[in-house]
Amino acid sequence: MTTDAESRYDVALSFAGAQRVYVALVADRLRSRGVRVFYDEFYATAMIGQELISYLQQVYSHQSKAVAVQRHAEITNRRLPTSSASPARACRSGPSPPPLCSAVK
Image 1 (cartoon, one colour):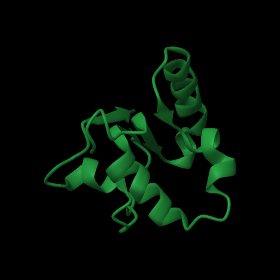
Image 2 (cartoon, rainbow, N blue to C red; image 1 turned 180 degrees about the vertical axis):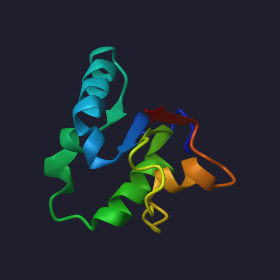
Image 3 (tube, rainbow, N blue to C red; image 1 turned 90 degrees about the vertical axis):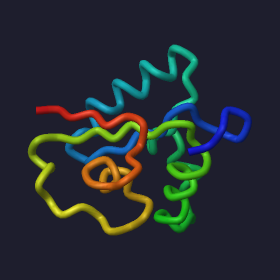
C-alpha cells in the first residue's frame, strides 16, 4: 500500500462478478462521502486498451491506501487467480493481507 501523499485512491475494491451489485452500492456510498474509491466501473474508460493485470496490480499495490476484498461464501473455495494483482488471494492466505477483508454469507 502507499502513503497518504502517494495514493490516488483511499480504497480499491476487489470482488467477484457475483458481488457486483452489492459492491456498486458500497462504491457509490463511499464516493458520496468523499472517499477516493477505485471501483472498476468508475474507471472503465481509463482501462480501455490497458493490460488489465498490470493496471490492477498498480492500483492495488501502489495507488491505494487500502484494498477492500469482498468475498462471498459461494466462491471462498474456488481456485483464485494466481496473479499478484489478486488481493483476494492475499486476503485468503497471504502473509501480509490487505487491510480489510470482508466476507458475505
